[in-house]
Length: 319
Figure 1: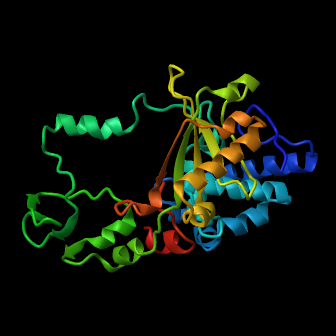
Figure 2 (figure 1 turned 90 degrees about the vertical axis):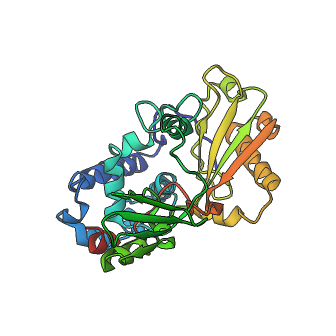
């Protein structure tokens, strides 16, 4: 494939038909999304119809050109780390609407990728833990929740018992199937949590001696549609003071499955080759350090970024 350089959110094109197709895709996605009540997507006028449709079917219905169909596929991959044929059109339209629309969810400037926490967002959990002064218990997976008495009884894997008025479960739905409940969950809820898989992604960080891409005026954000590239999208992750130059990239969905059998060094090599091809700069081949996080290996997340709704689930079980 060819490398093109642009400013803005979405790819540029010389072809007026492709340009119109891009524009129609974004406008249609946002228009359909506005028909969906944020608090009750199953009550949308076309909820049942859209929920029985995959995003692949919707993309084929909306888009005319191969270029836009491929980019629309990447748009789904990037935002929910799953494939268009796996997700409900109703759920994805609702998800994008919740994030402020197609432009905001995908943009850097005034968008979802614009800012990050100095020191990392993990500080939120760490600071809460500090304020709670020892009341946060780590490495204690919950195995049983008993609500048959006046209070709720919670038992952990290491046989500790906790008692309280309420329990808030803030984990991926599929992981709640690892917990035993007394009384048993309502049938509809029990069916729902078995039907919501997690997305699939490997997050990677390639560190360099310098931010060499800036010499060409690049921001370090690449959108890579080449099927041979392990990475689909990147963001410059250099620290605010310019130290630790790095490119953060994501191995998404089918590529994460395809490349998981490789060694860490083999994945690093393939990633650096993709960056060298994208930038046309040999410096990309010579990182000083590499880190990756394979979220699919995490027992207590089961994947990342989020759970997704396959076709037919939101309208039937989500209410």
